[in-house]
Length: 117
Image 1 (tube, rainbow, N blue to C red):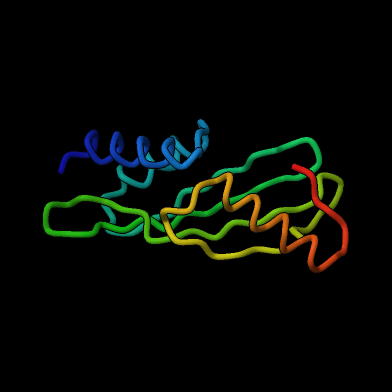
Image 2 (image 1 turned 180 degrees about the horizontal axis):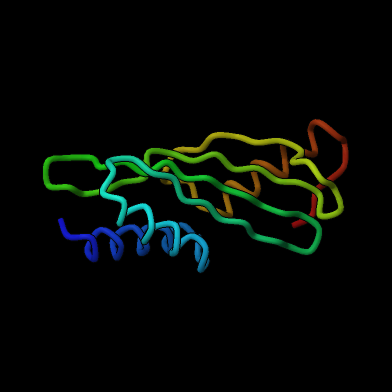
């Protein structure tokens, strides 16, 4: 599979899951251009009170040269805090919205405060 096809396929997959950002697109281009079988791409989203971060592990999956997302780590932090409150690993089919909800619920369970995105 050509680089352009891989890029378009990955970009479309991320968009289906709610991940859209210039940084992510740039990471995809750079990762594919390296020619390596494994690379990472990330995204940072700032909401009203929460910062959401994700780092995706992308691997070449088969002999056709097609790349796929292996999984990803996501984390949230309060906007005014320096450190991320918690992180969690997700399978590649979990949408950004679902990941945000899981992290917010986990943050609530650990702090007793509802995290508003």
